[in-house]
Image (cartoon, rainbow over all chains, first blue to last red; front, side):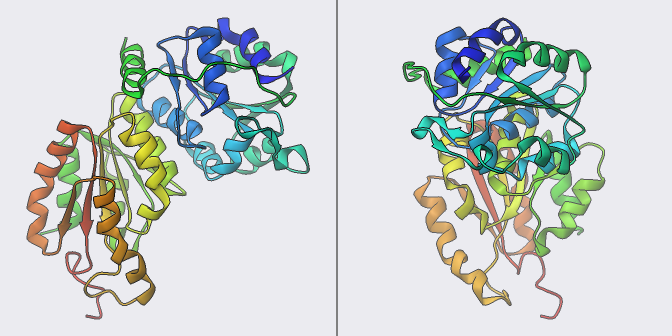
Length: 184
Length: 168
């Protein structure tokens, strides 16, 4: 499975949750599959989805699901120790690990070679780290929500992107409707 | 006047309850003060752009954030300031240790100091320079201004403001 197929499958789970989605094609795919006010789309700033989600989870009690990628975690590796030492029980970091920089032309990342993100998350202090194959994402995500524990979920899948339109919504509109959904 | 406590008191009085820090020798006292307070949650970050991500999330979650860092971080965070904090129009007070200014003992720090105000100006980021300890009296108004306009705002605090390095 590629990322967009996973997103389609888990869209019913994501729909009721606060979601912070990674820059580029992941946000375009989620936006096209099931746009919700509870989705915060990153339009720029490679690497910071996990940090934005962590700040959000620490600031309020609702569950927060971050949809991140292997490339963007590698860009902001300092995030893993911060998560490992601070993440509250309402924080779920789902890393769609397709071993490539999808938005820039599927260049391979190091997770397609020797680098193991689940191992790095554990070494950084993250207590609940789960690695699954693409087809098992839905149950693993529901389990993470039910656990009430901070979870890093590494989803191994194939490299590839669906052709989706660019998000043209104004960033302030995305942010404003998201904040209303958070407060609602 | 205990400058560290004064700064933390002003942050708390303005509702700032989420502070991330990347340390600097000059900022050690204020970071320690913030870490010990019950009314401010302190989360150290490993890099300043990561810290700005945390602040963006905390703000969307209903908390008023602030970041404490060195001016070298302006070089690290330009993309984050432009494409996250400014693009989504978010408030972010940045208490910045202005290394490389008067009474600086480390020459390399001057190399970023000479770019600091120019970079902030290029980004249209309001910047205030605290040189004398009494300049802290403006902090309360700067914080109010930041959360009024939803912009990143820089407070540059140089070595003279912090009382030098002990040997001067």
